[in-house]
Length: 427
Image (tube, rainbow, N blue to C red):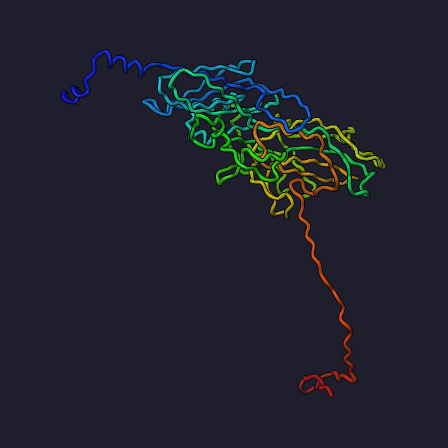
């Protein structure tokens, strides 16, 4: 031991210097940005973007060193300016992973306190109806790996977990002239199969450069029929562990979480003809439903006998949806047993006393994105089902009638032999 020590001998001053370097603290200043600059709009319809933050929760995870695995939860009062600066101090050369959430309900934030990354991956669910949504306080998130090599300031803009769909006007412009002049009412416009459960992380790995990879994965090419026509973005694909449209949860949390919670509301998947289910509670109802009371005269677009066209009805409603469905996109024109439980924007009309649905699959919608529909134009009759358009089959047959074939019969013997029971023989 003495020989080994002598081989690594240092002067007392050098040893104290190395010790002080190891214990030196550095500061990372996180500029948590929650302003509206990250929200994108894709046409000229002008809706106010008036959401902000009421609460910030920061969860840190020590990645290496003697206290590897240490977890700390900070609750931060947000700055009303939209930029909150929060200083995180740690020993030089520390390696820390940081998860930041905005607008978590207190019960949800408390449940996450003490979660490991595995817990977040496995059980870190944000339920919209458990106080985790308001039109002016939408849930947001970002994640980053911090390397404490020196004092630094890092911008951390938070991404909204939801998208928003603004519907300005509903227009009736039938191509089929036989439909013109028929009375038309809009009865409901909803997000069907509305997702109520949002995941917090999709991997265990923090990135120093990609602030959203843990929540959303990597950007990729979107489906050709993506909602809004976007070509590139985050693509959600279900796995064997993903919740289904019929999944329910009983959270170990308290308060709003101490109950059975459904993964989806307004479920129209595999419902019968003419059935539109509307059961979203509280703020989730506000996010996903616009109803019109016919008995109060609400929702009439075309008066019977009115032949002037087109007819325009002002909706002026913002709908909110988690960016990912509980099923992978599929063909919305299909057989009954081939339909899927993707999120859909559904318009229910009453035309001449009959109910028709107009479902639009929300394929590859993007987080933090405002889709602004200036006009939704109805051109023909819709579907008898709220969740899909029934596939129609046609078959062609060539039928001809053969010429008569004559078969003359001069005589036909009938009867049986009383002794043998055999039929009478023919001549």
